[in-house]
Figure 1 (cartoon, helix red, strand yellow):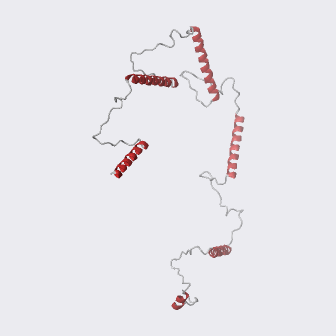
Figure 2 (cartoon, rainbow, N blue to C red):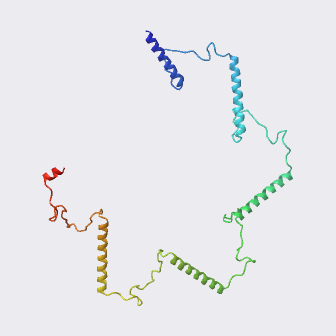
Figure 3 (cartoon, rainbow, N blue to C red):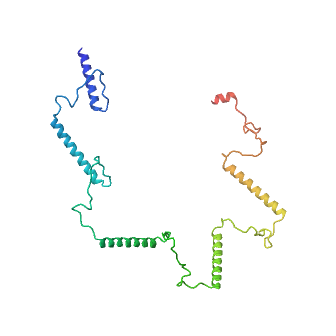
Length: 269
């Protein structure tokens, strides 16, 4: 009995420790158990203390509302009283005096001049902006035909200018072709050209014997290159284009050394 009491106490202590360390765990109880109300228990605070606590909470809530209104003036005014009204800020008894009609007209004129100066500054700093006008009958004079414009160039000067521009374009094209030889040749579809090898100033062509000898030399050089590669890189696989090509076994060729017998292999092992 004493051992069971000790184990029962230890189990209760373990449960209390778990409830203390893990308050988020749900309360598991017998469905037949019941409990009293925390607020209506005999030792609960009196109604005076409740009223004072409610008053303190209301004051704290009002202070929070005032702080939010002060820090966020852009928030709209929300009220639950449909009969609530407010006075005009400008017509209140403590408001400053209104400006006279002359002062208001002068202020409007100053603002209009400021807007016009701002527009002129924008047009000067951003000439790429399009011209916007609200008058459909607005017109403008030609810059080149105005009375104060410079005189036009004559026909000879225009021809000279066109020739100079054509020469500059041709020089630019030649410079690009020289600096960028990889660019494709753009020509007229009707343009023709002569053969480089058959032109009159071309060197004499080699005869048939020289061409045959040159081809034989190149074939020998290619074969020597292949042999040199095979000698320097024995790890490369043997590549052949003849499907009928065959090869003999290195170990069973007639000139190979004799195989050792079974007894010699066993003795060697």
